[in-house]
Image (tube, rainbow, N blue to C red):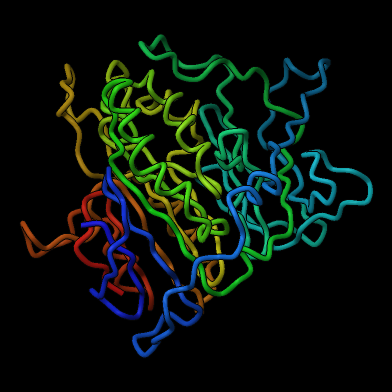
Length: 386
């Protein structure tokens, strides 16, 4: 079922005209209480042309290491989160740091100081990322893919059929995260596009997606703030189609973010460390968070592969892993009590059709201790639980 869901009005849906994939447009309100009866936000007055002309195009600022120090192995990485007033992706002398912003290396979580500075432990095969704060936007690239991360993998991926991550070289001297002020993410009411299972197996199916759901979404302009989150199975095992997925998101009128699913795996990676490297090379970290309005969106990687070696394509399971679970606890600990939290993942986080328990059992802790949590799984959505 394709739906436009209103938190606070559980299981009441207005059909959304979408012709492919499993998609839901989630409207998050200011209070998100059971008594909240605010209407679905009307379609924004902005046009697709205005998004294209005003979108914050840019990238993370990576400051290369001093050539004389490249033989050293730094134990930490630092940088600044700053207000990129001229939108050139580089921190200039008149651009202030942004205090109180969350930054992570995928394990530890910290917040920037009064000058916007942060410092985190560094290690190989880490993807650093900033949590976009309310009232700001991270830059997007030419395909509208949000740019809020940096991957450090000095020697690159092991040999993989679909390439994985190219060598990144020595740890940079600094990684600076640019932001620009945004009234779209400041608004307490947000429309967030959450989609799953585009799952194209060949170019013909890419064209089905282009002429169907993505053409529909190109006609909407009510998600420019929160943007689109695609929660897995971007392709159907043919990872060379990731580039086509990026081309599809260039049709959107807002930033695009992504999670991996069980059809986005590098199946020839059997060590448990590089199974999503080709995904990461195109789309960024496997898990992360961002804010829009009074909502904190947590994007989770819920697929673990392989469960045994030798492995087949079906040898995966639903799991967060201890490293991600530690990050999740630290991330949520920094979220104010008056924010709603949306937990998104490819596999069901809550599902009672086949059993009466949590499918991803590690998530039970978060669901039971937080006042407002909305789980959004990467399967056809039949209801949201608040």
